[in-house]
Image (cartoon, rainbow, N blue to C red; front, side, top):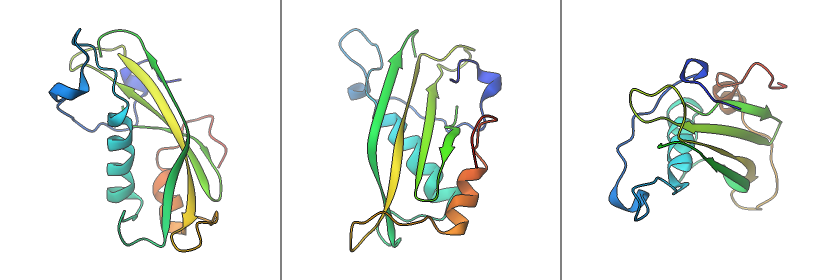
Length: 135
């Protein structure tokens, strides 16, 4: 699990909004995980949410919140699924405030059946593979 900034593969700066915090100013909204993953898929894995023949549906997710509040390494990359892990760091801190992740299963947009990822999508995701990821 990602626990230090130096293990981070890539960063996506994100300014939190009022609704991302609870009444105690603690980030507890997992929406930012999806923002980070989907931004990476669009920019580096050649997927378009509106036009790609495959869609990624979240089939599991988790969040572990620790301190006050890295780019998601891929911890498992199959032919039609990928598991991400995301850490959220407050600017200037070394320990993440939250660690979480989820698994995408890619489905054909029309049939909604599991389908293999295109090679360019898989190659884009392989760039995020953690050292323990099975490719």
